[in-house]
Amino acid sequence: MKLVYKILRYSGLPLLFRELLQRNKVTILEFHNMKPKNANYAFPWLRKHYNIIGLQDYLNAVQSGKKLPKKAVIATFDDGHKGNYELLPIIKRLQIPVTIFLCSDIVGTHRHFWFLDSKAKFPEHHKKLKELPNHLRLEKLAESYGFEQTQEFDDAQALSREQIEKMKPFVDFQSHTCFHPCLPQCDDKTSFDEISLSKQHLERDYNLHINAISYPNGDYTDREVRFLQEAGYTCGITVDHGYNDLHSDLFRLKRISVNDARSLDELVVKSSGLYAFLLQK
Image (cartoon, rainbow, N blue to C red; front, side, top):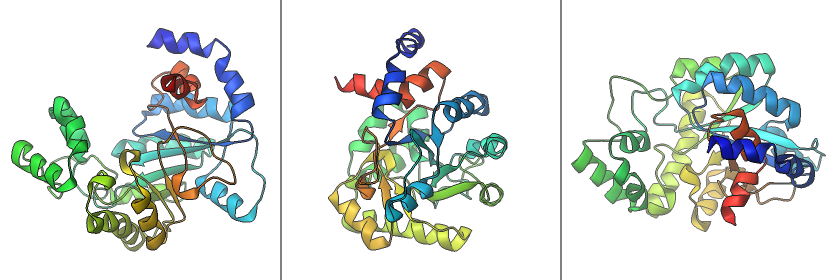
């Protein structure tokens, strides 16, 4: 794939996508647990070729009708991995307005992300677990793998309370539900609780203003959109491929995954939307 990314990068197509498709749009990029060495080339490159804005800048512009800069990009991180803290020096140095979506009942604890443990230990079952009704997924994790979502481990996978406090002046923290379930696989009560209680916990325990949520796995239905509105959110972030503008549906905002920028070639290709576009063909 490294050669493919390099060929695509120097084909000129990413430049065309930036100048033609992204020029008057807002591109939301999805990261998860990018390493500092990758951020040290990813963020400067994005700053040079795009105008990086905050998620709240975009939401304010939608409300006010204010114009946004050309080739606007929003950098978002899902889950709240403890490794995100290592990015703080470069975020501060380059003044990158980053949004991190937190799993409210995993951050600040030694609980684990169920999908990390299942993918590492049982990769052949990982995808099937996502497809199960939520109560069966939890039963399977407990019975077959000995995993409980409230279980405390020796090591932490998520940001600590102290790390979040240190990052608060420089990072926009938002919601990613409580425990990262596949929301459409949940019953009504569980889906609503995951959405509403995450907002309540983050506002109460961390003194954050929560108005946005990233749907875990990008999975959502009209029911989740309704629950977001009832819980007092302003927007919901998907992984539906595409770009946004001032007239986009705020509860179905599109986003592009760049897979933590494992190389500059991959970042250039994926941030333009070219890679996902080709996959759809």
